[in-house]
Image (cartoon, rainbow, N blue to C red; front, side):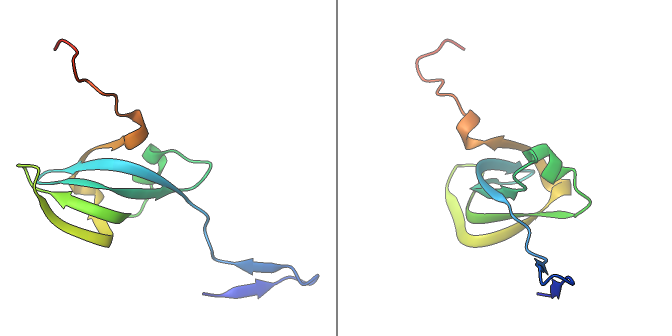
Length: 100
């Protein structure tokens, strides 16, 4: 990491602050539960629309079609071209007992 100082001694670094957002992410083959990190002033869609090809997910659990856990990992990157949808866990509403 590079550190720069201005004439007054102020320190500048390349650290980017991000807030953790628990999400459920669906790819073409698997479902991931984990933490997506977004800048405090941005939304999940802003992170997905960035020019980077991959998004980072931490504390991830990857499930197969049957809902069985295939892997758990502290870090995984996901190619955005394979993402079908992303839901913030706080947006999930319990549908138990409701008519469909």
